[in-house]
Amino acid sequence: MKIDFKDFFKKFTLIDIIIIICVMLAVVVAFTQIYGEDDNQVQSVSFDSSSLGKFVEKYLSFYNNGYITKSKIIGYNSSNMEKIEVEGTVIWVDDNKANVKVLLDVNGSSILAGLATDLKEADIYIEQISLESDGYKYQNLTDVVVEPVEINSLSDLVYNFSDNLNATLTATISTDTYKSILSQRLNNEMYLKFNKPSITSKDTANTLFFIKADKNEILMANNIFGSLYGQTDSIKIRIYNCSDEDLNIIKETFVVKNIRKIT
Image (tube, rainbow, N blue to C red):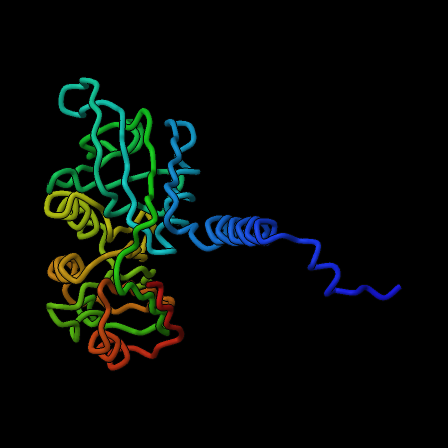
């Protein structure tokens, strides 16, 4: 049967047509809000001391997509064991799910949190912790993965970095010139100067781990170890507020495998 569309549409009044258009617009708007604006939705998740491994997984999902992440910690002041609650921006998290370490910026002060059984250097012992993202991301954020390199000192990794290049490195370095006494000195200095172990041996002989370490932290470690022959694995470099000049510096220093522009 052939449909006469002219007769079909004649059955609709102007009001009917307006209603149909409004319904269609409402569907389009709803679809856009559900599928097009997920980045702007507030996401909040809480964890207790028994589920901190999942905290790391959730944080990394925020981190890998460039979200600015907030956190509220309920726990105990390590100095006097009084109950305390703090809120701030997450600026560093150890990737080790078995020994969680979280560094917050709380009104301009860095506060290190962890479990009392795992982290005696902590400012706060965690009882409960939350992660929250309101959808905002760091601007001009870029991740670069580069080929493994041989080094004669840790400073070889950042010698070409300008003072304006805001970057962190994540890598593993194996070396046959490692000294455990220097590793302990490094650990002490990392907590004293930066309140986080972003360069550590993790009790593994002849191996150093860079966990989102910046230029200043790497140069401090270089001052401790001095000459150190080593071989890295692939290095992940995160660049904040990345410019073309920053990328050129990385390309001049390393062999680039992949560039991912996050924002």
